[in-house]
Image 1: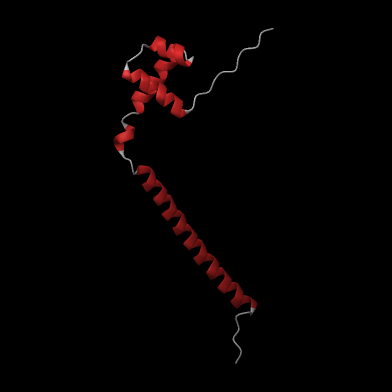
Image 2: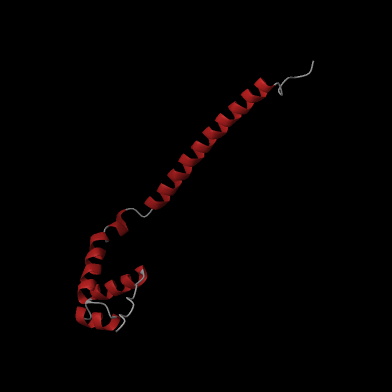
Length: 104
């Protein structure tokens, strides 16, 4: 019984390089397919995906940074709120347990 060869996995960088070659149109899809061992239909799919998402490259370069900053700010505010709650609870527990009694 023949074993099927393992399917090659392409990284995002490799796919991008192949799609760039497709967009340059220096070679036909068949030639690029033969050079990389990728089926022509798969190349068409990668090209369609790249063209579909191409506008997002220029849409907002700082969006990811702003999202990280917003997440950081939200987490910091939540942590300060938690510190406030715990401080209040600790003070209440000290008062109720008699540990916070000042000597005369």
